[in-house]
Image 1 (tube, rainbow, N blue to C red):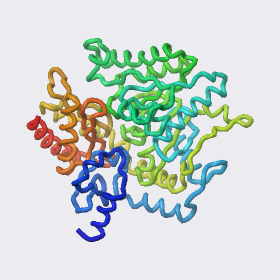
Image 2 (image 1 turned 60 degrees about the horizontal axis):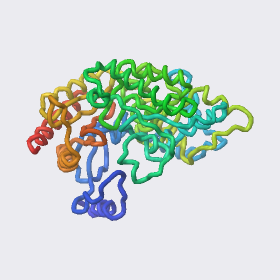
Image 3 (image 1 turned 180 degrees about the vertical axis):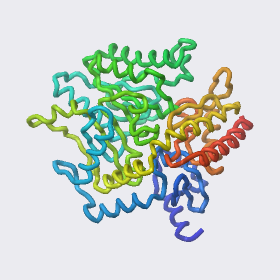
Amino acid sequence: MTQPDNDILKAAQDHLWLHFTRHSSYEQAEIPTIVRGEGSYIYDIHGKRYLDGLAGLFVVQAGHGRSELAEAAAKQAQELAFFPLWSYAHPKAAELAARLAALTPGDLNRVFFTSGGGEAVESAWKLAKQYFKLTGKPLKHKVISRQIAYHGTPHGALSITGIPAFKEMFEPLVPGSVRVPNTNHYRADEISGIQGMTPEEYGFWAAERVARAIEMEGPDTVAAVFAEPVQNAGGCFPPPPGYWQRLREICDEYDVLLVSDEVICAFGRLGTMFGGQKFDYVPDIITCAKGLTSGYSPLGAMIASDRLFEPFKKGDNTFAHGYTFGGHPVSAAVALANLDIFEREDLLGHVTKNEPVFQATLEGLKDLPIVGDVRGSGYFWGIELVKDKTTKETFTAEESERLLRGFLSKALFEAGLYCRADDRGDPVIQLAPPLVAGPKEFDEIGSILRTVLTQAWARL
């Protein structure tokens, strides 16, 4: 260890406030410090290599160490480092907006840039409220979202989030958010109280809960439904067949906006540019971020249909909302270069081709007694852990604490795999490698998981 390395570790220990982190965990331990990345791998301050099984945080689609993205940022910073989109445009934001409009499904042609995903969700709720006020339905302000769903940390986005533990310290939050069941078919019997539904039957049942919620709240008060194409929190809940089509019908019937929160699922994570293209639906709004720049510079966006922009073309109507760094010139330039990589290297085709290989690798772990379910789509998968495969008995809160934080998180990292062991719902391990990963990396992921999960079961 060099003195500069020691200084960095001390600075992290003494001054850095980590996000979503129990700092007590590092009272007597060094904070893991990542210094560089290359392809699907990251390296810590000691030079140890890890497979990045989470693409940073569902972000680094094009892989680490892409010099062309760094060069795009440097070139733009020299030309125009910053200018806001408040009543003015700049070339890269305009070019990127047009390119995104060409990639989105349907008539989602208006791009409102933000700094990140939570801001995009916040923007979508605000737009939904103002749109209905401007079109003569001022009472429509409520939003419906799913249980265990995560939609961000700003007060509005946090209100839409369906994870009570994340919200309780910040109450009271924004009123008007209503929860409905999620699409976890593995737990369908206990969620619905109905035994033995097929995926199609459960998808219809879950979508109908949205209709019942709208009716219960009053259609004249509900503005939007927020849902991810594949729900992240809880461990990758893919939609049952027909679910999104029925959701679209319900929203149309009650004049409610359908918001597809694709902060994780857009830009190739599922093998398509946007989630609606994977599951054959067209939302009214897409919220996105993360993979838009592969994480090389912060950027998010709310992409809205032409219909929602119409009222803002008239008179003195203004969407009185914005962010200093939304559509930052450097970030927009990086996003354009990132989309060039998608096209040049056919990253969507690469994910589509390798999705069955990744799925088969993870499903091969089902012979382990601790693995209850493997689910997901594209390069976005969750493994649910159970005490009893036959009954699907899950772990108590205390057992989950010991299993995930007491062993799995640290053991997986020490074995060379960076991923997420999560208990926002039932205990799961989440995997979302960079889109450049392939069978070699999948084999490495599978091997590490098999070893560590076998050790975890032996400790129970």
